[in-house]
Image 1: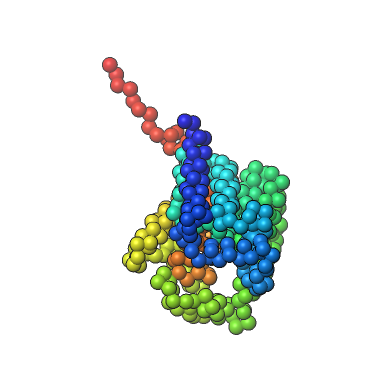
Image 2: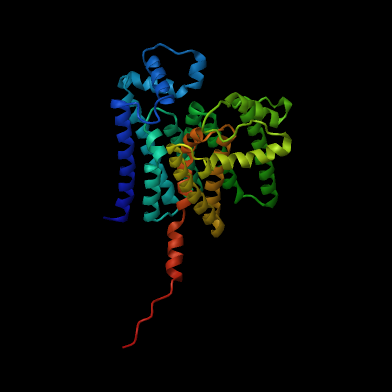
Amino acid sequence: MTSQRWVTLAILCGLAAHVAIALWNGLAGPSFGAEADAQTFHRYAIQVARHVEPPESTLAVYSYAHALGLAYRVTGESLLIGSLLSCAAWLASALLLRGMMRLLHADHVAQAAGLLIFGLLPSSVLWNSVTLREPYQLLGVNLALYGALRIVVARDRRHWLLIVAAIVLGAYLHAVIAMFGVFIAAVTIFLELWDQLKPAGRVALVIGVSLLSAVAAIVLFRVVFEYDLKSGPQEALENFLLKGMYPARTNYRDSWTVGGLIGLALFIPVSLAQYLFEPMPWHVNAPIDAGYVFENIIRALLIGSMLYSVARSSGAPRRHLAVIAVSYFFIETLWSMGTLNWGTSARHHLPAGGALIAGATAYSSHWRAVRESTAPTPQRLRA
């Protein structure tokens, strides 16, 4: 079997696992993890399909369910169809990830391994196969990143259409995905202009991007996340967290107090670390938590591999890797600031999974060539 066929086989294995869960959920479900939100989305989608519109406030929150209901008008009101549509979104994301890894010169072994993780990680199999927003959020993230890499690496500006599509899709699914698309657009413009500008122009570009980022942050926190910034950013964050705080076994924070500007500066990295790696092994108190720990270990290894590649590379490869790494931590930081328990964080990790795997496997063909060129040549024994 050729190397490329192993990559294709990895995608097919992931697809088979996702379709199996979709069949379970659609024919004998609900499947594990599809009891609450997935059922709610499906129920509202049926109302939309029957032209019984839910309240406007509900549609604002469940816009994905509205789109699913429009699909049900064509395909019929079937939970199996809804689940298979999620599988199709995952498959499109997998193909985009393979494209990203090719652009970033990942060798076939790394591509196959990365796609196996992408397709067989338990949280992906369970939640990207049912009527949830996560598979479509993943598609939006991968669309934006693939489009940016095609523009920056392959110099193909036609792929701006993918970034625009990602922003539109994100606006319909979740504010974080829309903001990620806008962030990728800004980074792409920055990289396109950087090499064309003289030093003075580069300074102006940095200042301009910084000011636009500040405005975007205010819009994000004031309009999208409904943070009331009149009393200061730390109190706004506390009020936002208070609205989402409820007793749960999986909470990794039992307080929403931020504690002034210094506390806010510490809150962001601490919250990100907890979001990425909770539950810690000593916090495991149920069998399902062992699965979360297993995925956390894989995530830590992938993050380490990505950061190691950034550190050891130079020139254009480092720039491309830095874009992936910064993009990954950008979206995960946004999610972490509104997430308080590891049950929710496990779902929020899914949209950024492709970015992490692309960064962890990038330029593996280059590192393999370096290792082979520096390996000592075996000496032949004289007769």
